[in-house]
Image (cartoon, rainbow, N blue to C red; front, side, top):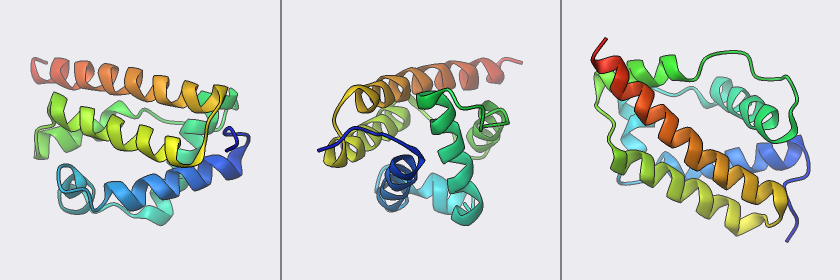
Length: 126
């Protein structure tokens, strides 16, 4: 297996991940019912985010917290939801990639989930 080497690898990772997550029995409904996710629009943005995160390319512009807070207001997200997101993301990486960037992506996913949940919970008291 190869490491995550470039944008093409990120695109494949994100595509594989969303194929799994959208039908996931625990959290898929967030992507199909809570928000009606337009994958053609969403996937390139998410790939930009991960390209920025893993390769320090200034591709992603935006604030990922805002849409997640809005989603949480429609259907509350819990630690278990974020744990499942991380689990599926890491499984998706492990199925196709191994190496320094793959490990970095998994660690960043764990950190992002933690920060996201904290910020969402903090928004409840604002």
